[in-house]
Amino acid sequence: MKKTLIVVDMQKDFVTGCLGSKEAQAIVPEMVKFVKSFDGEIIFTKDTHEENYMETQEGKKLPVPHCIRGTDGWEIISELAEIAKKSKVFEKPTFGSKELAAYIAGEAPDEVTLIGVCTGICVLNNATLIKAFAPEIPVKVIADLCACVTPVTHQTALEAMKTCQIDIA
Image 1 (tube, one colour):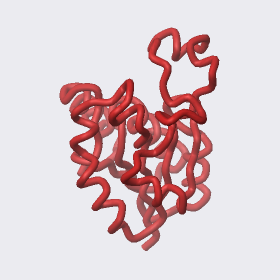
Image 2: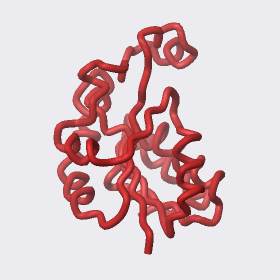
Image 3: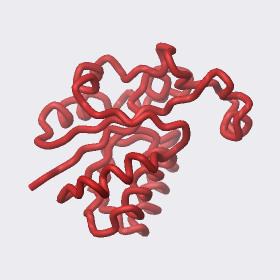
């Protein structure tokens, strides 16, 4: 069985940095154990913005410079950095990656699992893009290995993904 794990945006800015949260920090120990024991392909995504971030539509709606290419906050958290160096990494300038979804559709794994941050933004967008590009591949999100801005937005995102036929574990 060919399995793929996608670790979404586990970058310093989203865990301990400018957009970090206690919820994101809380999932790190169990996430690290899960990633280290995963038997299959591991892929990371990296939210990647340029110096002109504040001039973009996202920057105007979320005026917090974050994950600027080359900064410390753009880097994968230290607990997962070595694994990320050996893995395929998709940089994405927005919430979801069409390139990642197309890659998954082309590789056609038997199942795809997503974990990471932020449940209601990047996890949701990548899971639904994958489902749209590859509707017959089972897509699963592990709720306890994801975090969002608040527990309420986390739950709302999980419910939205269920509606899109994404399995929540």
